[in-house]
Image (cartoon, rainbow over all chains, first blue to last red; front, side):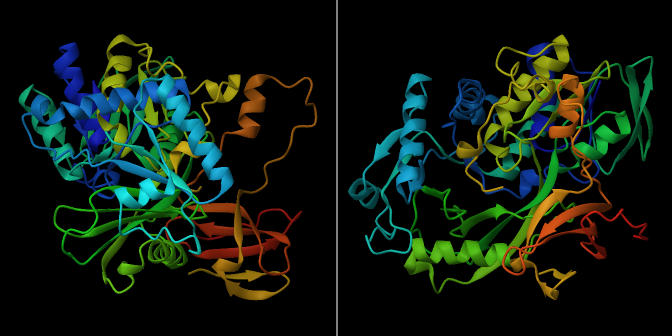
Amino acid sequence: MVIVGGGGHGLATAYYLAKLHGLTNVAVVEKGWIGGGNTGRNTTIIRSNYLNDESAGLYEHALKLWEGLSQDLNYNVMFSQRGVMNLAHNEHDVRELKRRCYANHLNGVDSDWLSTSQVKEFCPILNCDPDARYPVLGATLQRRGGVARHDAVAWGYARGADRRGVDIIQNCEVTGFRIHDGAVQGVETTKGFIGAAKVGVVVAGHATVLADMAGFRLPIDSHPLQALVSEPIKPVLDTVVMSNAVHAYISQSDKGELVIGAGADLYNSYAQRGSLPIVEETIRAIVELFPMFGRVRMLRSWGGIVDIAPDASPIISKTPVGGLYFNCGWGTGGFKATPGSGWVFAHTIARDEPHAINAAFKLDRFYSGELVAEHGAAAVAH
Amino acid sequence: MLLISCPWCGPREESEFQCGGEAHIVRPTDGAGLSDTAWGDYVFMRKNPKGVQYERWHHAAGCRRWFNVARHTVTHEILAVYRMGEPPPEVEP
């Protein structure tokens, strides 16, 4: 079988196919280099505080895998459970976040509601002045959330898959599918044809391009999502702070850089770069929330192309083509799900049916109406 | 920063506009008799092309009128601007 896409999700899929399903005659084909797409471009935030039962099940499964991942891979992914705070700046935020907090409790997902004074105590450098441009009325805190080293996740899964017999082929772009009688027979690539009875596609922003080759439609729009890092500074921020309302999230890397994520760009793009107005809005919000960062200089910024689904939930599914499986629609928040995504996708491919955890994330939901609306928990405006 | 030529106001900065996504999606007339597949295609499925996209823009912080744009999704080059109701022009990417 072939996995198209050598990002974290594709490599995790290959790893679990080999480890849990005994399937090692697997090739991962990647048009660039492994982990060079969104895996290496995100802000590495990990949490599972989603609203709906289906999403909580999926992301919490991923979080539990994160908690044992370095041991499982025997490779340090530097998973750091430093907590993830989601700020509330208005009454609507407070109601929405409290509701999500209670929904999390019902699903066994840890989530605490913090008052303004508790927020200030937990993150002293945050501007909690009642006269601030974005007053902090409280926050949710998932203490088991945090960050991980994104490159190490790709490398760890790649090494684990490789050791179990998986072939990883870089600089190999898929140019088409060979389909006969409604079933896939293999993939055409820039390095030639690879025959395969099963093909799993997990290519983020290019999902629609691959679906076009296979002859079916996806409800995906591809947008740039930007991030930027500052020059390294002394340790100053020991948690992750996210603000839904002002489109900004921030943490500090182990190297000392402030890692800042922005909102998605307005328009469809495949350009892997974003627009400056979005950066300006994000920086404006960050400086309002953290006045002490006002004179920090930014080192670099970049964009990744994210595949946004109408309900802000992923599609991990069989397709109209037999033996062809798609894993896409992670939009602005796929990194956190990497282990869980690979785990359920491997199950879906190996058994030719979804696991109970990803059964709701089928492509058919856009025809049946069973959407999993997660715009609030997805936390990035789009 | 894109420079977008509003058909009514002339060239203005991207930050004055909102993008309304894919253009020329026609609402089916036979709503009651439509299959779930046809409804799903209409409501959710998108072309999302890597290349020229025909899309709607709204001059939100200007004249507040809607219009259509043909734009390349890799270079971001704006290849044509045309009014609502006009057919999509042929453009060379």
